[in-house]
Image 1 (tube, rainbow, N blue to C red):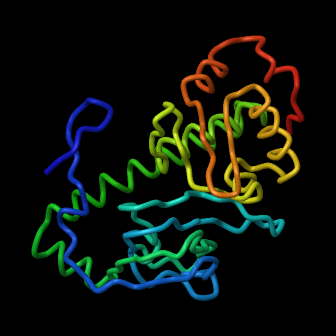
Image 2 (image 1 turned 135 degrees about the vertical axis):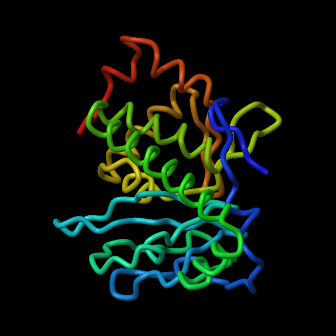
Length: 231
């Protein structure tokens, strides 16, 4: 069945066309693939979260995505590129299902809708990544941190009875890699947002008041614009 996207048109869901496979389990912190051992499969997250990052020329790491339940990653296995800088690491104990390039091609021959669904999925992922890249260029660090929290809440959050969006704990270093700044600046900005009552966090989770964060981004001359360590 197709899903609506932004209320306009429909798109095919790849999960409805992928064949069932036996699951694979990875412990928290375990590397699923890396430039030295590139992705051999397109993966589906059954349980847990996976951090997908790319290595920069200066040796730093940028988090491209944090993939949660029912999310796909490892698309490079379908392309077969030899210039792969991508690494996938389990953020939690994760359970995955994976399909090789040959298995995907065979399934597309059987069910062409899978090819359509994967093409649409890749386009959406590219557009989301483009939005994040534009955010890094256009916005200062305080705004980028808030935008990242909204994105994480949308992709990986669940509502609490109090109306906040709860995201399972992420290290400040991981958030910094996602935003494209330093851990120290992320810690400063998160502490500031906590003092303003926009977030609450512990070792296990972070509660984000998404409406308040959105309103702060829309409102000019709010404290987040003047109390910053912008990079």
